[in-house]
Every structure is written in C-alpha cells, then in structure tokens.
Length: 96
Image 1: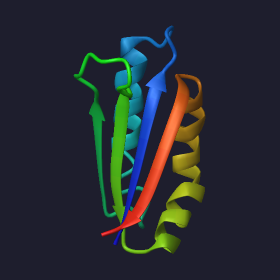
Image 2 (image 1 turned 120 degrees about the vertical axis):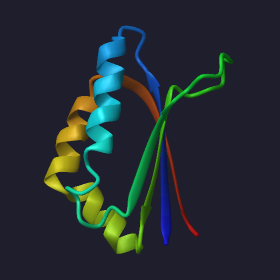
Image 3 (image 1 turned 90 degrees about the vertical axis):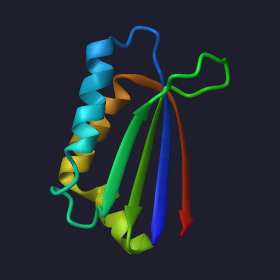
Image 4 (image 1 turned 90 degrees about the horizontal axis):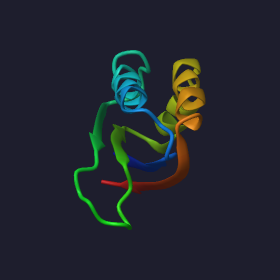
C-alpha cells in the first residue's frame, strides 16, 4: 500500500466557504477515482506558526495507482480549484 499525504497553507484571502468546498471536493473523489482506496481530509485546529492549514491522507494499492489518481480528470479539476486557494504545498508518499 502507498500512503499519500499532502499539506497546504491557504492564501490569506481564502474564504472559509472555499476552504470547506475544497475539503468537500477532495472527499468526493472517493468512489469517482477507482484507484483511490481511502481518503481523509482535515482542517488544522492548532494555532502555531509552523502548522499547515489542511491535510489530505489517502491510500492506494500501488505507486502506479497513485499516478493514475494524480492524472485522473476529476482529480485535475479539483487541483485547479485548490491552486486558487493555496500558497504552499508539501507532499510525502510512503509504503505502508
């Protein structure tokens, strides 16, 4: 299994409604992208400077399945929306 973790920092001007919409759109990929085994999205509750604002944790059977997810048209639509809201992104992929 491959665990795919993504963390984002929102732009200052990102509206709360848009942050929730981003979360909704990401969660909606489950069942749409066949290679996506599981997905969880969390909004940060810690109030400290190094913290990121949102995290995605997802699972795939193989690295190839992750690549399929990344290239999937529905995922790419969400990516375009996300790019309008965030100023920083970090990613870690690892085997579990």
